Length: 278
Length: 285
Image (cartoon, rainbow over all chains, first blue to last red; front, side, top):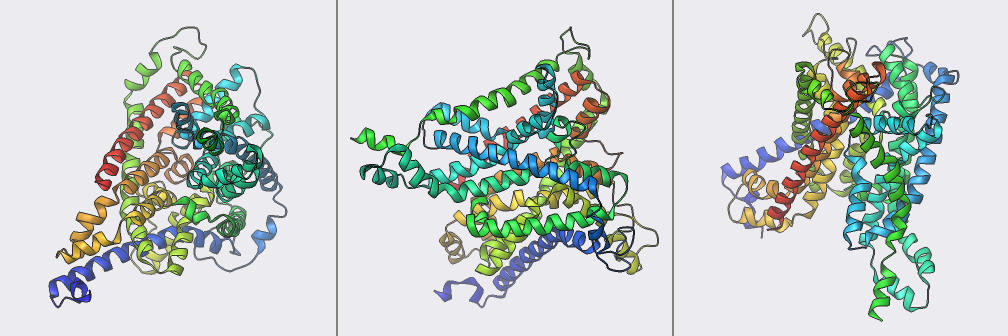
């Protein structure tokens, strides 16, 4: 077989061809990977500065800005709000999304196809336009913006991630397992609880995790649907950054990055996150 | 018996009813109201007409904002494809541990907060940032370059922020290609570049189209990155909508430009979907 491989062919032109192809592709790929990681590394690096600005390189290193976070009550308050809203939105997304996925995943009807497209459409529509339209809707029916409207808006933009991953898991499930459980006398609900749900659990968890991150990070919907008392973390950080480059935000970013990596590794282990995203 | 057997493997479509009802009430209805409001001739309401659309389409400034937003998406998508494709290619031919590492590096930006990612670019591109500090240290510049609040800065930052959306579908597409095809191509005498151009690239088209669609849609709607890196001088559609709605309280005009933006996005999505169907037909042929 080796004599047909052009890499071992004595022809110099082909060697050059193979070499140049690999060098160009690998070089671009490595440059792109550096570009992907650089921002994360930079944030963690400057968060340990001892100075008052985000000058690079830092004049010295300290943990003072992490200590400063204990007193940054505005950021803490915003973070609690964001965590609460994300938790509610994720819970609702899983409850409604998994139920809807069971209904549409194996159904060949046109209604199921239409619903599938409908549930996924918030992924491509500009979230800002949706946020604005929701505000118009709530003000028209006379419901003032509140944490409730915020949770509703976040659920709409988070639920597609749960539906997409759950439908994919259901499509991969072997239906004969359900037939087997049924022929052994299991009822429909029992089969669902003991066969279907355990099999799709990793997909639901991966979808729920991405939904949580999407809600926690959402700005366009929160901008319109929050009330003045409900400060959300990404908006708080964004406004802090528009004003002055605050080093406390760098320390908080460092914590968020580490938390994200930790959660990602846990989800990779329990739900095979990367396999579900490709 | 066959009927009951098939029954246990499908669930009742009614299970989708709660979410469907929620979507009709909190997603479809608001969008319908947005559409209706865009036909109001003035913020006080009462009269309906095409005034807002005429205002938008007759205004060079507004058309310029729309044009620069759509063009921004093209530039970001092109750069992301150029950088992202080799990453997917490298992932495909790497040993197991390296695959895991590349996947982690690709997923991390996808899941990190957009504000955090954008903030990093402010630090990198700023007057005292890494790029300027390095260039000054090398003696290449005397005064800091203006990198932040420039078109190039926005494109590079958005390309980094959206790159995972391009890489992941291409990894999927490359994984589906039968490795024997590349071998067959080289046995028949084609070099690496030629095999890539004639075999690998066409067969991965479905992944490229899917990646371009996601990247483009994300880039033109990336409110935070656009406004923090672009600054006040560069206005793109999302910020334009927000200014009209929030600062100026001009809801009918904000609704009209939202609809124009929505329709533009939908047109682009349909074009990509049509291309995707064509490319899948091509890849499966």
